[in-house]
Length: 442
Image (cartoon, rainbow, N blue to C red; front, top):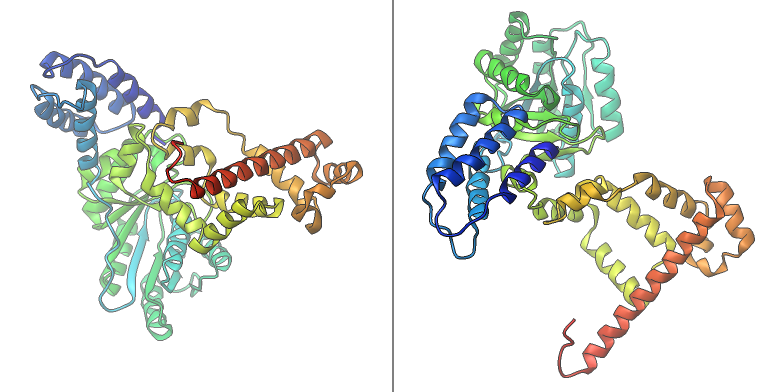
């Protein structure tokens, strides 16, 4: 996401040189290219004009701080204005003081509304809420079944009355069931159309009047670029929305929708879909997104992902195994599974400050990780815990069972043995430091 824009902005800022004050010419040259980069990212022309004007007003004649170069100062102003453009801070869900909190999911067909309903339900379930999904799309034949399958996967109940009742009656009955069963969040998957029409809007307005939802979240496909902003503007005008969920942000979306929607509609992006899996939904933090765009990483998101994947007790147990050199291939397999839950490795690297370009340059093969998993899974429990018993015949069996070559098995075992030696060196160094009256300088 934002790869093209990130590359272009990095290239622009590298060209800025000089000392003292930023001249109007310096700023004009840089902002002319920033303007083109934003337009190529499909940001609205109106939004680009106001953005450039604000940055220029701040930058021209500004004294360069002792700790910053002119280029870094322009980056600061661009960062501040990009963050402002997208809403400054994370826009949270408004909860009802009297449960259930009702969230209507609206949008056009094909934007990922039903899947996003499931993702949002999982997000709340993981946050210790008790959501109920509501199948209120009675027109698309597969919509009800799709939501029921999603609910079954997530172990989240789905309220359905088939396709014979009106959506208004369905959502009223769902609210009553939520009250009776103690559900604190109601997520209503409504019908969409291939285009915005008055029949669709009137139905949504009737549902809105019948249950007074706290949130009306518009799901739009980020791949549609500026059209996503136009769709958001139309729904806001005809229905009134409280926020936006941008889907498919993991694709080759240029980012224009994310950068424009708040400025154009006044409504914030609240969540972004970052993949096809049902856990691939993230709260939208403008400051973190801007840091990624400018190649500054996103440490907070990385920490949150790690905290969700690893409990504190698991981390301490793993640390102790490293110290005692008891880290087995079974531990390694468990570790891989947890890291994979955090998302693609390339995305994780991009969150580390200074590693955004490295993540693009280094060929990260997810298939290699799958190969390692297959090799370890091909071992018996005893072999995973004690790889020293892996003789030639065992290695041939493992290679055959995992669809790999014996050389792949040998390579993995060699890497594992080298890692154990490294852990031993660190443990020995730590013991040495404890016996010394001063700390070693490394």
